Amino acid sequence: MKTGESPVQEDDASEAGRKWRGVSRPQRDAARRHRLLEAGVELFGTQGYAATTVQGLCRQAGVSSRSFYECFSGREEVLETIYLEATRGIERRVMTLDIAAGDTAYEIIRRGVQAGVGPMLEDERLGLVLEIEAVGVSPELETRRRQMIAGIARAMDAMMLELIRRGLVPESPPGLIGLVAVGGMTEALVAHLNTPSAGRMPVPEFVDELARVITRMAGG
Image 1: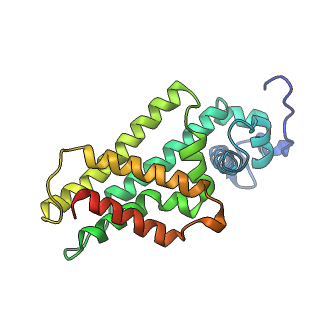
Image 2: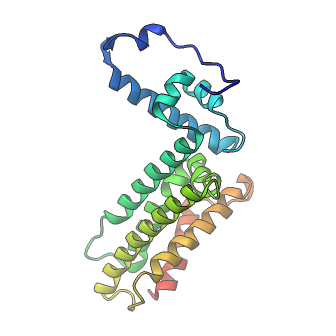
Image 3: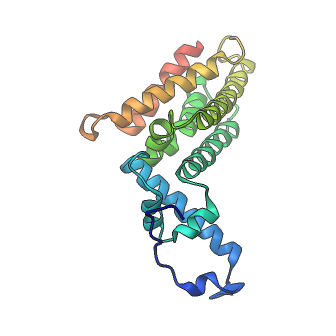
């Protein structure tokens, strides 16, 4: 426990014995870890990473400081875990798009855009954490961020290669369209999230427009 941190009280019985109320220690640890990640999304996505303390995460999650350090080494590991789990999920969604034989280039690209930005539009806290709060925290996290961005770009490239194979868009240098698409979607998403709600484009229309721009960029 760090100096100045006071533990959030938990039932001591939950720390003793192999099972408590029929729940094993690994199950309890997994539940605490999940609550801490949820607390990270809430606090990092509302008050910001810099303003969030370990004690604040513990209070939000309802766990003790000791339990926190059994799950994570510090705030940055919570942030990194949220980032990695969310972006891996996005990459899987893009890689496993359901593409029908008669789909147009726009329809396929829109589905890819929805897979890429949908989770961050459905939960804006997550969008703020991934695209704003996680940026520039540390050299180590920046390295991981770049790796994950490259992974999502490769997934977008795989989608584009399928469009090329079907003759829906012209050939383009491998790797370029995916990187440009991901970079453009990221900047558009940040601008959208930073716009006051009253002045924002409705989410379906926002996704439509992103898909149209990328379709034109790809030559579809």
